[in-house]
Every structure is written in structure tokens, then in C-alpha cells.
Amino acid sequence: MNAVEIRDLVKQYEADAPRAVDGIDLDIADGELFGLLGPNGAGKTTTVGVATTRVRATRGTVRVAGADATHDPVGVKRVIGVVTQFNTLDRACTVRENLIYHCRYFGIGAASARARADELLTTFVLADRRDANVSELSGGMVQRLQIARAIAHRPHVLFLDEPTAGLDPQSRLALWSVLSDLRTREGITILLTTHHMEEADAMCDRLAIMDAGKILVSGTPDELKRSVGVDTIVELSVDTMNEDLRTALAALPGVSSVEITDHGARVFASSTDGLMARVVETATGNGLRDVSLTAPTLETVFITLTGRGLRE
Amino acid sequence: MNDAFPLPVRAFWGLVVRDSRVLAREAVSFALRTLMNPLLFVFVFTYVLPKVGGGGFATGAATGPRFATVLLPGLIAVSIFFQGIAAVALPLSTELGATREIEDRLMAPIAIWVVALEKICFSAVQSIIAACAVFPLVYWIPAQPPVITFNWPLLVLVVVLASLTAGSMGLVLGTIVPPRQIGLIFSIVVLPVTFLGCVYYPWAALSAVRWLQIGVLINPLVYVSEGLRASLTPGVSHMQVPIVLGAIVVVLVALTWLGIRTFTRRVIT
Image (cartoon, rainbow over all chains, first blue to last red; front, side):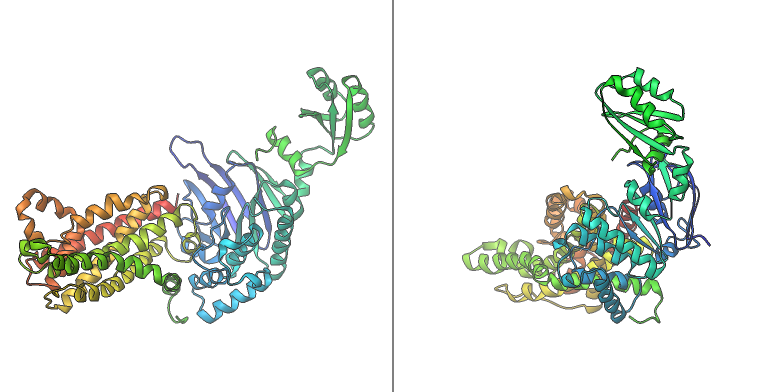
């Protein structure tokens, strides 16, 4: 059984508004770490909102561990853990109490709830701050505590909406290592949304790229990178970028497309044979300053699919 | 609570345990917000004014019985009602808006309306504690103590129904008033409801201002004050008990239905 099954999901918030989610299908297997990528407004949070029972689907179904999010929200809530984009920790309670009461909401008895809270405080390196008020925590600690709380009742599927947004690089790395441990230890299925392509590439088993409410493509990071038919990308920095140069670059053998950037151009090519030399030769007259070769990234995939860069 | 109880009951109990812990931590502010208003009111109107010669007003000549006797049920009614605002509306407005800290409770494995219902019930517990705490103040402080005849069954019924009604009113206000405007609740709800809630005068005495006597009937606090008069100070004229109970139940059902509806709309889009 898939951990998450989404079928023909549509969400339209207002009758005259565009569809926030526009007919998507998605399967997430048990134990997978699945990334939902896309710019702001792509429909990622709405999709997670429906799966976590907080957004009503206009059409279609979402099943989480077999339970239908629309018809059996309580059944879904029983088996999921959720970390939203916001700090939703209970300000009236201490760090430890946030964990204890979460367990109590899931019907866990007082003694077991305390034991589970202490175990999580140690695992998530929060034991020193157990009696602190949550408003005294740093951004990284807040995020660790939110994840600890979300998994306290041992959910089947964990939903993380932009878990690394607003974190400094150290906290971000620490968070990824926490998630990695979590999968090894608890075998939990994770669905996360992000617009950090590099992170998704490094961490996710599979991912889907969303834009304007639709899933553009899904698969493993390598599959996605292969799917665009681009083997290499030449980043070009020139003094004068103009249409003539763009046309000349696009006409070179092996080049599939050329995109104008702030400093020059980005050349997408399917073959590397003699490419560099030809690009340098073509651009010399325009005051060539720098040229570099890179392998395709998920961002390449995204740009190729949508024809534009990420909107942060 | 052990595993013998079904999950929804244990989850509901978890919410109650959390709220109890927070209330215990805020015991001092709970005591201050509960006791300050009746303490000052009783002190000034039934102790200071009679001593300094407040005349007919302070001795209650205008309404017949002693003012303390009129005031006792009224001030208990206000305390019950005020808890609904302080215990539900104010925190809920913040929890739903700025901090979203109710999120974790919404994700508990129970229906959303149960979370709303717990808010009403826990607020009612605070209202009942407030009613008990205010009683000695309004009984012992006045220079001339009020004349009381307990009708215990009616008293318990009125206090419990009124406390639930206050919680449901708090739920409605907390879900429809944005956090930025929550301060307005005091000027546009608390003050008119209190001053026009037959707190300081029995409803019958309003016959002198007939249009107002009819107008205040939309104020639920009127029925609570009158119900407490019927159960504590039957010597003071009061509305008939069936009318009082009927009105409180109608308001309770209506506000609970509305509150759960507005709450659900705020948390599910």
C-alpha cells in the first residue's frame, strides 16, 4: 500500500480564483522521502493542506495510509505528523510540556508521555532546554522541537512544509541529519515541500516539480536530470549580451537552448564535444569575461520545464 | 486516564490537562482578573458609599431591598460572563491569528468541533470557580450583608448553564474578532453587556424606562442575573424561572452552534 495516494486533486479557494491545485495525481511509497518542489504559489502547501485534513478538496481524493482525508479526517490525523511553515509551538508551555501534551492529545498515558518526551529531548539535543519557555529557543531549536513533537506519537507519515525556510546553514544541515536519522530509526515516510533544489537533490528518494497547481514531472533526482536531454550547461559571462550572440550560440551544433542571464548567457547542450571551444570562439567578439561548465541540476530541469527561474 | 477509555475521550482529556496546567501557572492573573472588579465594586458601593452617606442609591432605597442583595447575584453573573471573554476569546484570537499555536491541538486525532467544545467546557469550569470565588467577597464586604435564601438545585443549574453560555460567547468572539481589534471587545461587548445586564438593578425595576426594559432582553446576561436572583435572593423581584432557563438554553445552543461553525471556518479552508 502506498503511504500517500493523490488522485485528480483540485482545490479552488474562490469560485473566480485560479485553481491552487489543478488535477494532480501522486503516489508516495511506504518509507520514501518524497520532495515536492516548486516556486511560491505552486500549490505545494495546498496539497499538503488537503493531505493533512486542513484544506477541503474541491475535487479528487487524498488517502494517507489508507484513510481518506475528506471523509475520515480523524483517521488521517491518527497516522500523520505535521510540521507547518510557521512556529506553532505552544507558547504557554515549556519545551518538555509541548512534547508531553502532544502525546496526551494522542491518548498516550501520563507516564508514557513523560518517558517519550524525555527520549525525544535527548534524541533531538534539546535536553538542556527542557524547562525553557519555547519563546527562548533559537530558530534551529524551534524546528527540531517541532519535528520532535510531530513524530512523538510515532506517525506513519510525516509532512514537512518548507522545513528549512529561515534557518541558517548550520541549522539546515543539522535538520537534514535529523531527518536522515529519523528514516533509519523509525522507518517513517516523509513528504516535504521545499524550494531549495540542491537539498531536494541530495536528500529525496523521489520528487515532483509543481508549478501553477500542476505536477510538471516526477521521478528520482537522476531521472529528472536525464529527462531534459541536457548533458551539460555552459555559463557564459560577457560584456555585451545581445540577440545576435544568442542566435549564434543557439545555432552551434549540440546546443538545445540558450537563456539570457544577468551576466551573459546559459547554454544548454546535449553534447560536450568541442562545445567549449566553439562557445568561446563565438562569444569572443562580445567581450568574453568568464566561461564555466556545469552538469545539469534540478534547477536546470525546472527552468527547462517552466522557462523561467525560481521565484523565491 | 487509562487505555480503557476510547481515544477521543483520552484526547479530550489531554486538552483538559494542558489547559489545567496553563491555568495553574497563571493562577495569580486568574485571581486578579476574577476578583478585582467585584472586589472594588462591592467595596465602593456597599461599604464606602454607605459610610460616606451615599444616600438612597447606596442603601438601595430606589429598588426596595438593600443594594448588596441586588448586587450579589449581578456581580456573580458578571464574573461568570467575563471568564468566557478572558478564558476563551482573548487567548483564542491570538492562538488562531498571530501565533497559530492551537495548530497542534487541531491535529489531535479528534474532530475539530471537539477542540472547540473543550474550549467551552474548560472556560465553564473557570466561570464556576470564579462564581465561587466572588461569592464570599460580595457576601462579607458590604456594610450590611445581603439577604440570601439558597435554592441549591436552581443555583447549580443556572451557574452551569450560564458558564457554558459564557464559554460559547467567548468562542464566537474569539473566532470572529481579529487579534488587532480584540481590545474593542471590552468597549463594544463587555461594557454594554455589563451595564445593561440587570447587574446593578433587577429587571422589574426597569419598568420605569419601558423601552430599555424591552431592549435589554436581547442581552443574555439579563437572564443570568435574574436566574441567580431567583436562586439566591428570591426576595428581590425577578423573572419567572422557566423564562430564565428557557432563554439561557436558547442562547447557549445558538452560540455553541455558531461558535463551532465560525471556529471550523477559521481552521479549515
